[in-house]
Image (cartoon, rainbow, N blue to C red; front, side, top):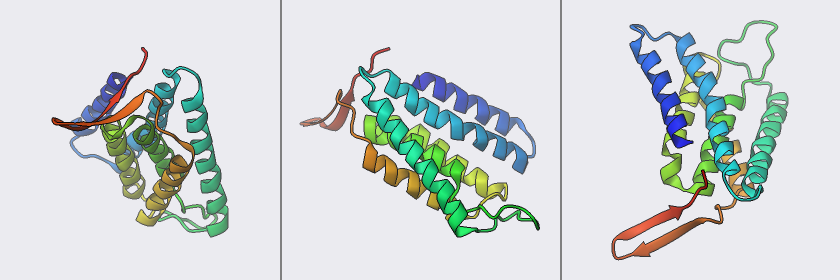
Length: 179
């Protein structure tokens, strides 16, 4: 599954870098795709576990996060950077950043930091893409990431087949997944 994520991120990066002038639209499209890919990767990892505990925890954290994001949007009524008269005022917090960081933080909490490094980089790119394309302020993407991270920390446990170890060679994490 991680090979699929790496392949997708590589393809998007190559497409992005091949363009002589990267437009806000291309950055936005890559961010739009990654905000779906990252949580899908986390969900896929959870489906490789015996039982459905990981999938249930993933569902609880991402659903709670998105419900909170939508409620905060209605409460705060913050204008987006590209606001035009008549648009909805729903800038804070960023749902895209929340979705991407839900996936990345889930992977980190459940399977360890090593497995979450690329998803965190992707989630950071999603946040960047929202600011770069004038859809959100920096505070909006930070808010989305914080909401997602808090729910993940609340609902998600380390995978039962993940163990921490320390020996004379150092400290690490072992995890086993069925493919």
